[in-house]
Image (cartoon, rainbow, N blue to C red; front, side):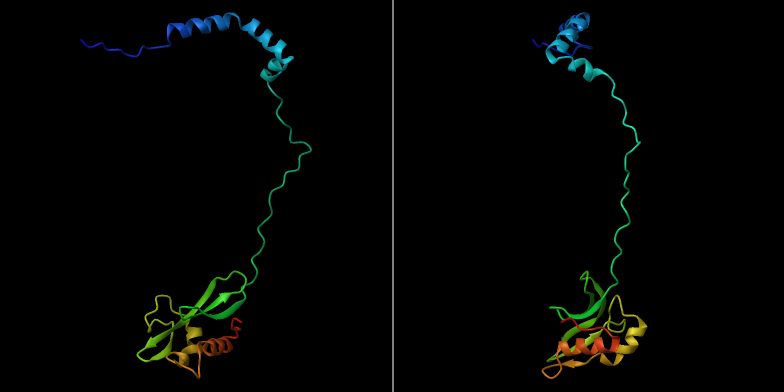
Length: 160
């Protein structure tokens, strides 16, 4: 045999009875709560006055500090990229090109569309640096020398 217990609709009879007892004795319960709390129970039930805006100082934060003007420096990165970085933030401003190993020599490839760069340099910068594309690097002409030459042509100091 199987007994099926289903949930009743509404509250249990015991709950209804205890709620009625509490409601019938609400005055006595409040009086006892006030006596035990020195009146704080009734005071906590009273509506509180809403705060007034008079005399308050409302401060709306000012605009953020203006970012300093970017100060560019030429840097040769550890992975042989020649870039211009902002001294203050460290962010990359321009990518001039890469130092690539071609056979037994190392050469500088300018960041142009002809050299398959996705984000090529502006035509103004390419015009100034065009003759440096394909420059061979070695003991006599290092990556630091290349960065210094690029900096001289663009009036940007190399990173110290």
